Length: 216
Image (tube, rainbow, N blue to C red):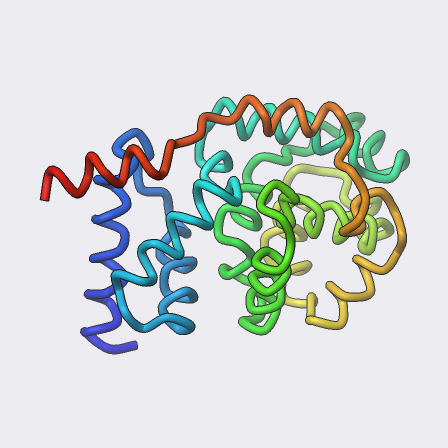
């Protein structure tokens, strides 16, 4: 961490706030930008990489409260039946840890190598594959026994925000994605989840970038 790297992160976030004024800065975005700057040190190139990730690959929908609620509701149907039923019966809240996991593209709380793998998968798949959702679902299946052991919101919060992220490795992600369930990379998302994602507000990158350029 250097003064220059912090300035570059701030510059990218400020530029994106002008690109999409409707999106208020949310804690975690800086983690994503910092990770991208590790790959692309030039702030301008990192900015457009960030725009592509947020807009074309649908990460921005996580930061829309209404869309996130729809995704959270639909997410339960993506889980093994026992896990989904347990979450419903115990009223465990999904929104917060899904926001942290997917909104930061697994760059917060998870090992850096996990975030590297997630981003590699995102860039290697088609934009609307929604890799973070698939990985989040696969981890819920992988840690089924631990989730079923959570009987309170406090238990679930500790597990999803601390215990699970600290125990996940690259091998965990690879093995969870290899389980062969619907969320594997070549499977379609359930209709309820696809509907929730399709309703997410999207920015026209080309027209917005032209407008932004005219303002500079």
